[in-house]
Length: 342
Length: 180
Image 1 (cartoon, rainbow over the protein chains, first blue to last red):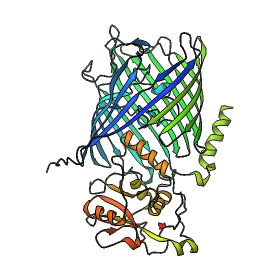
Image 2: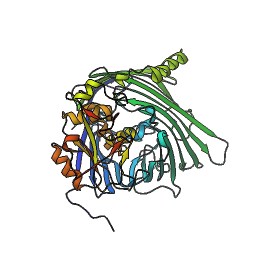
Image 3: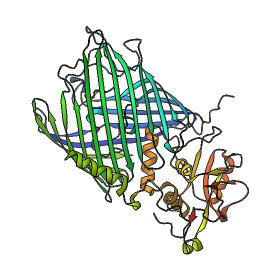
Image 4: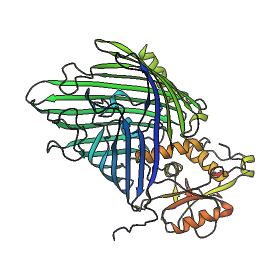
């Protein structure tokens, strides 16, 4: 028998997240500025015992930056529906969701979404930057996802299998990179992730994922994209140690040209009362003649910061970054951020 | 240099974490309570709806349930978690001995889990033992906890690691000052 709708249970629940920053750096043309971060409304509703709706509606300022091409007005705000998922939960071994979500590539992308308050640092690693903030990965996917536990005893294995529209490649770069309504080709992107959370080591998660898509830039041969990612993270309430490595491989059809983009980051932090000092080192290396995101080039460097939890819901963070760049002077940056949930 | 730093980090991660900080794991060992603890400690009983076929849970399964990472019973019914108000000794016992977290850490854990979509439902908070009994009696997928003295026949007791609350070696006991 079909599940009945219980109106008393289908109430919307809304949680908000936001952040405000003061940022300065030595990059030519940049100015020291106060910035409004993303205003994130996280909306959920239990549609029935088995079905649930989840969404993230984000108001964000500034122009988009897609593979180095900018569009939109500075200082104006726009709205993005970042996640829009109907989830069906059959049991612990099989869950299905349809809509727009975060692709299960690696760890960070599905562990942290559009809230800086939940993150230790002031922002995401370069590797997992959003598509409209210069990121190189298909962070969002529009399609269907199956996920759940794999019967494996104390090993705690889980799987995620996704099929979706993939990232836009045929349209001009300045247009929306997430294919919300129309895919620019019939081919679909696939992603498979497997990870383990062994009972014997609390907080440990290790796993890998493989993502496959076919990109179709205008006036060039099609490009096969394969993204291999692996991670090992240890997260306990008082400390964390995140490690992820990734290889984004672009193979140009009909030629022997293959472009490998490696990247990794490691991040460690430890809580001392209300304070949490942290360190992150990150690296991404894109070939100068890379056919899809040649603007990224080589970037690597350390970030050092301190998070202070001023209350249960408000965190103040101070972060220093140094970024080495290929053929350019390195960039020093300092960011003071207040992140909160409400 | 990089190799040496990596080696140190691996050694510290695998061997050197102070036990008291392993807040992701229960703070107390699996040994039986000491004599003085046992004298002042009343068993904390894990209870479910009488229609629930479950009879026994391991401590690891109980932890997964109370942290929201297991969301369904074997029969496919969704698990509804019942917690007492923050500050109640029964809740402190669950946080310390099952979840291995304090209140702030548990709150962050649930916000994070709900946000990622891994946790389906926040715990239902009830303020009295009578409220817990009534809720679990009415909700087939519910699970909660009570002092042994608050039990009645309307709900079902679950063994933990094959032990009933009166058995020697039963791990969950409400301390008069269940600290966090």
